[in-house]
Image (cartoon, rainbow, N blue to C red):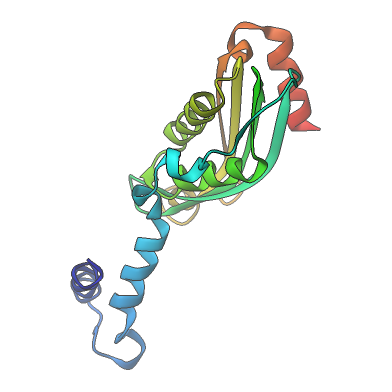
Length: 184
């Protein structure tokens, strides 16, 4: 797989008018192939394996919020990165999820080619599936290199997306509490 990807990168470099055999580029196709495999490793991960049974019984029924989980993903339209942070809240229903698993869930879905809107929904649905919570809320704030490095080249632009499920969707005070905590 790495060799095949490296061959394609070799062709891309050549197609751009560069000499892939010059000293500085000689190993670039292989390095780029390995980097792309790392950046898209989410395709080889599964939610079940990632969570690995780290769901625990708990009487906690108040909102749990995990803020500022950094994320790095690839825009499926231009294959350029978008970089940001994710905030996840849930209302437990007899079960809580191990803290590190939130970051692992974010990474698994972020390490796939996609758009931010879909990433936000995938994370929310995964947390809901694993915890069977009464509600899940996810907000992602990110900067997109496809908008900053090309096209309109707006350096200070960012995008915010949100998905509210269950009580966060149906109960305005719950939603407002989450949004207030995220801003704080």
